[in-house]
Image (cartoon, rainbow, N blue to C red):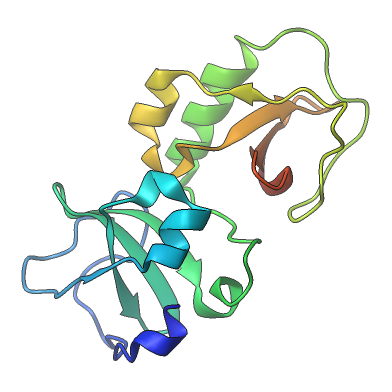
Length: 163
């Protein structure tokens, strides 16, 4: 996939490598490989650039960074933990916990853990997806502590725990 693309990583960039940051027009992007779009279809039409040891996925219309994945993580088909700012985490937590059914999962989960089929996972509201596009396509459930457990619904794998 990206490892075989022979894309030279950028070094010493003059922009912030974080979700929501804008990438300058001078930076050349590459289309995401079809194999990645198959795994994460919400990124169809998106581009990427390598910065140091990270894959930076960019929404082409706005040039905003939507995901940053460690290069080593990308060699697996799962485990791409999100890089959410504290504001994004707060947005997700405050807008999700208040609208969720009172039933909570009676244990805590860790990133990369598989969630059993008997655990109900919910879609985020469109408002949350609009404010934090990086999590589009993911689902969630609240755990016993009231944390928001973000899940990749295809594998039912935990990708983030937001407290």
